Image (cartoon, rainbow, N blue to C red):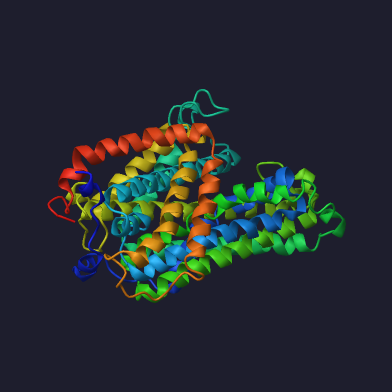
Length: 466
């Protein structure tokens, strides 16, 4: 039994199977998808908080450092996605290199990342939308404003707005990938317009004195700030779930992953520079530092535009992470570890049942769970996937199961780069709170019970001697 837990997916056979998903996306679509999920509402929030609490004007370098850490994982994802262009992201990569039990662990962790990322963002979207309604004199009943246990609203019972917006996005995804990509593209360009609008306004008010002292918390503040900034970049891994729906994935997957990371790194650094240059960093420890900066600069007219950008940003994040979750369930089901009807597709090549299931789970999670306590699952799930994918590149090149596969992209400075990337992820994992690990332990236990009660017996490799 122990040996069978590490049976590995036959990638060559899987690549020869008749595809059920449709290849429609190019490198531009992938890059926009990456920008859509990486640049969310956080770009209007985290630079100010990091500057005020950790790095001062040196906040720019915290994003550079965080991007370098992510770059290691991005290169590893790029090699995997160009070598094994199948849905499932790190789950599929682990299945082909380390075996089934590790793949299940990674896939289950990723499900928590995608589900709770979408749910957390939906709750934020709900708060913005309720503020908009209140501006027109419309106020929802207290019980329908938030989930039970939400700070600041003890009477909350069900976040109806978050629930509805997730269902609407799920309905959009059911219409087909082209429609989802088209809307995501429009929203991303609106979001980019808002970001550049803020930067242009702030550049006219930059004062050299605001950059002194440049590192008020010392050099160590950059490292601490980077651990916060790192999570602004999580999401580029979701791009790799689209491998089976991309034209020429061996070429386009690395382009989409690396290009989106580079563009988003530049955007975060640009916003950070403009923000701390226009307003003293000591004033930025607020929930809406960009909006505050505009008010301090007497540019109140732009504050509403920034709120629009935040809503656009959160909408694109929800579209991409819910999409990623549906494709992950599709892949796990196709391997037999979840019921087979979860990988059946409709006439527009969308896995209907998995999309509906994941959408409903995300909607209920956003409506009834105190997300502030459970959102940490996003971090631990992401870092575990990054770590295993990073070290997995070494196994990818050495394993008999995968070493003969043709690849269009290889990680530079092999094997040093993958090892450094793995150690960086392990370091950040070690710095997570004990509470985070306790919740993750419960989540993992539930997943293992499901695997041994169903997946182990129903796996397509259950009769294999691998």
